[in-house]
Image 1 (tube, rainbow, N blue to C red):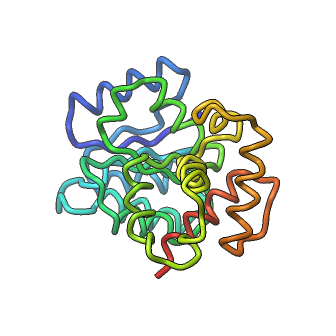
Image 2 (cartoon, rainbow, N blue to C red):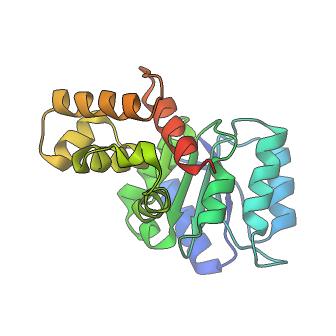
Length: 215
């Protein structure tokens, strides 16, 4: 699996390269600024892009904007964004088109190799990998919205875990309930949110995130 990596801090970039290569990813390009990232995404056509939000020269949202431009040129390009803090605006921009794998992780999560590699693989496969803090804030921002207010506390827990990209099996293990119970909660959630059920977990998660984010 070919990866384009963008991170301006040398030590973190080098560590990410080593980690990805240890898990059999091919580094198509590793860059430290926006212009080089834009060029690499266009020329290398990677399977997934792992991108720091803030890159030179602007050190604002250069990385995110390059990734969004690449997704417009190549719809569905899987992108995993790394950020130092939870910034809802960036999360909303990333989720806006609702197509292809997307992820938003805080950099603290990068130091957990298994969690990070799982997130990269999930996004590359077209799924989602959202940091729990991001999901919590998105849910909190919509807490007063009428449809969400209909959810029970347990359904809200299930929704948060679904939005992180977890499977029904993983949710059941986390909440110490049966998969059948999770399936029932999931069905209730989609009914209350007026979202059609689907056998495609990734699409269901994207639909939930798109719903939560719409304003």
